[in-house]
Every structure is written in C-alpha cells, then in structure tokens.
View 1 (cartoon, one colour):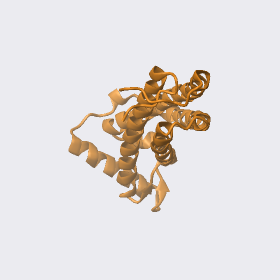
View 2 (view 1 turned 135 degrees about the vertical axis):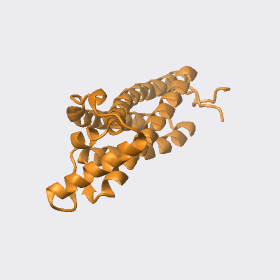
View 3 (view 1 turned 120 degrees about the vertical axis):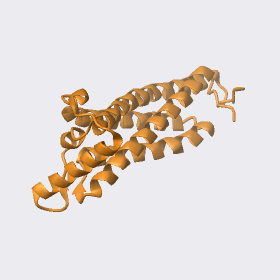
View 4 (view 1 turned 180 degrees about the vertical axis):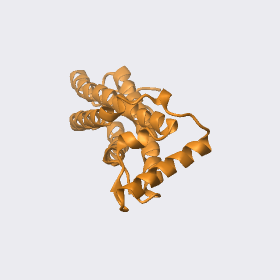
Length: 199
C-alpha cells in the first residue's frame, strides 16, 4: 500500500519509519516488563512501581500508535495536528519514565554482578525475590527496582535495556511531533489533498 505523501514524500516516509521503530521499541519494552512482572508476581511480591508504570504507559502508547497509522493513511490533514500533540505528550511521558527508571539504574554497574548460566540466573532471581518476601514478613510486599535489577546480571542488562528503549522513544516521539505539523503545512502549501506516492 503506497504511503500518502502530503506534499512531502520523504517526510511522510520518515514518519512511517519513525512510527515503525517506535512500535518495535514498545513491543520490546512490553515483552521485557511483562516477563519481569510475571517472575516477580509468581513469588507473591508486588513488582516495582517503575516497571508497572512503564508497562502501562507503553501499552497505551502502542495502542495509540497502531490507531494513528490508519488515520495517517486516511489523509487526515487536521488529524496531523492532533497526532502531533499526542506525540508530544507521549514524548513527555517517556521522558518522565526514563528519568524515574534512570535514577536508581544510573549507578548500577552490570559488569560487577556475579555471572552465571541461564538456569543459575533464573534460580538466583527467584530465590532473591522469595528471600525479600520472607524478610518483609508479608505477601504483597513491594520489591524495589534497584534490588531487582541488581539480583542477576541478566536482570541488570534487561532493566537497562528498558531504560535505553524509553530514551529512544523520547527521541522518536519528538521527531514525529515535528514531522506531523510540517507535513500538514506542506500539504496546505501544495494546495492539493494528500496524494499517494508510488512506493
């Protein structure tokens, strides 16, 4: 299906590339955070609030991105401004998430955490979460993000990957929030409705 060009085919294709990269990053974040939540909840401990918040914001952003692509293809000229505003809000949301995740993670050095094979890492993470639950004396206690990330080298790298992907999403949503009004302006100056380019 050809991409609508809105009077500026390279910008329209760049928007679709940015949107595709954002969806890929969000799928990665959802997979990593959902895995963390499943592992932690299986030990009767509440997952870190930062992980739950990241999962929630990412799911909502992914839903919006999947809905915005058909609107872009439908040549929604005024809708470009609405999408630009929502992209700016998502940029702000992911910036807040990146700061909240980065506060405890920026001091964590993954290379000094004991290295082990996959089975040992999984067993260590489960044992760590169970020991925290028993030490707190109650089911439903909350696990801290830094404690979880520092429990194994794999958890550390995966948590830092989530942090990095949130930073990347800030950049991607910033790009799209600038591209969308520019497309609207180019389409308006061209004086024609957004025609489709041949791709």
